[in-house]
Image 1 (tube, one colour):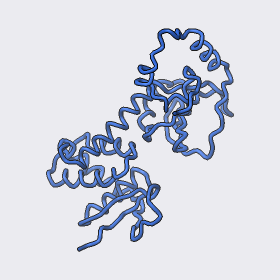
Image 2: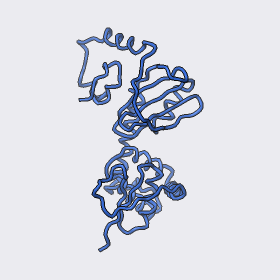
Image 3: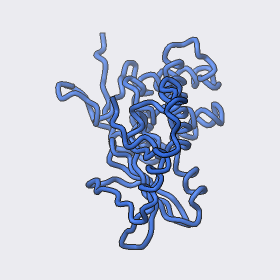
Image 4: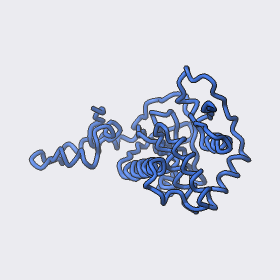
Length: 249
């Protein structure tokens, strides 16, 4: 019986595609992010990210259906444990059928990929509405800055939305869990890594005024805590001024 081979990758999308490209040719293989790998994972080998392999696999997925690479990428952003192996099995099925594998949701591995994609998409949609920015000063002038702490790695799904919304402004949206930031100016947007998280200073005083406004306008008799938690879970409120920066429970 052949031992199962474990392939590690660097945690990036191109790195995952490279590892999947290598694993596809093996009889029994598992793909794991090196960022999440256990120290006791003996016998694993690391797949160096290869842009050509990533491009070839991406083109192959697109031939199965225009939405296949989109669903696979968005599911990857959900950061679910075991996602890589579920995607590998889904792609094997797709290439075997020469068709979109994500229509075969009765298969557990396909269902897992589709569930991950929906999870990331739903959280990105939520944060388009609840993300708050503060106008502050930087070395290059005024900038709108905000913090989020999502469960999924959704900054790539928010980039185009906020870039268009602030098309004549500069903004920085920081993911405090992953130490990354979405940066946007009038020309483009991109994702960058952060070394530290400095406090965001409200240099205009507007945030303080918003807090005072929400506090004075609230009608306590009509407060519905259950409905609030349905639309804005407690874990997301720490960066929202209307909730006074409530810490997650």
